[in-house]
Length: 183
Image (cartoon, rainbow, N blue to C red):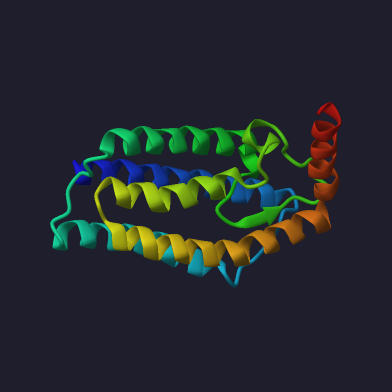
């Protein structure tokens, strides 16, 4: 079962990379500007190593499906639904890189109504759920920590880029102020 699961997730990521490449080209042809190029290789390395380390831990240590799989699998499926919702809400603006189209309207629909970075939340959950599903506890711990450090670099760079080129600061605080006013 592990290899079918892994094949599914890796296939999904490959399709996402193809979509990201098309979106990158589309944005750059319209004046999109890339930020965070120095940390992007680190992100690619960590995400690639995640699958390698997960596979090694499951195979070398003879790990199998968790006895709690009936909780973890639906949770994983939920993360995938949120992932698809987040990516489709961004549409052409979604990318694995930080590319900002100057003066573009900030996306505040879909899960972005409640979270600034729902896809990063999904990835953080995946780095826990996927290894736990197959009892790969070392992978869960190490890559959750690595992801935390990467996001501590990436999110500020992304937010600064959005603040510099869009009305990012106006989009989210106004939403929060409206919600507070309803209470």
